[in-house]
Length: 218
Image 1 (spheres, helix red, strand yellow):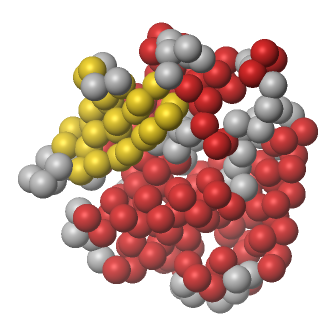
Image 2 (image 1 turned 60 degrees about the vertical axis):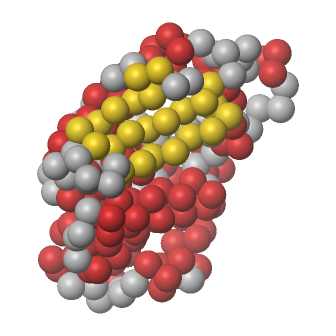
C-alpha cells in the first residue's frame, strides 16, 4: 500500500470531500485536498530530510492524507474518530499491522489538547498540519465579517517550514499582513499548536523556532 494508491481510492476521496463539507457548514477553513495533500507532502519531506527510512516517509505521507477524515463524524475528537476510520480502511485494504499501527497512532495524536508526538511519523504529521496556515484556506469572501480564525489565516501572506543545514533547528517562518491580524491574534489562536510543534520537533531531535515578520518570537 502506497500514498499514491490511497490518493486514487475513490471511497477515501468521498470521505475527505464530505468531511470538508461538514467543516464548511460549521464555518471552518478549508480542510480538503489542498490541505491534506500539502500536509502529506510536508510530513514526508521532513522525515526524508532527517534521514528516516523510505517506508517511514511513505507512512507519514499516508497519515497526512488521511488525518482529517474524522471531521466527517464530528469536529470534536476528530483525531480519534479519524484514527478509527483509518484503521478500518487500511485493514480492509490489506496493509501490514505494523504500518497501520504507526498511521493510526499518528492520526489519533495530531490535534492539540490530546496529541502527543509518540513516534517520528506522528511528530512529522503534527508539524506539517499545524504549519499549514495560509490565506487560501479562508472560505469567507467578505473581509468585513471575518472571525478571528479567518483574520489570522488571511493575514498570512507567506509561510515556510525549514530545517537548517546542520539538521538541528526547524523554523516556521510567517509573513503576516498586520492590516488583517496582529501577531498577538496569532498567539491567541495558535499558541497551543506552537507548543505541540515544539514537542514534535524535539521528538525529531530538532529545536523549534517561530519567526514572524523576521522577528523570532519562539
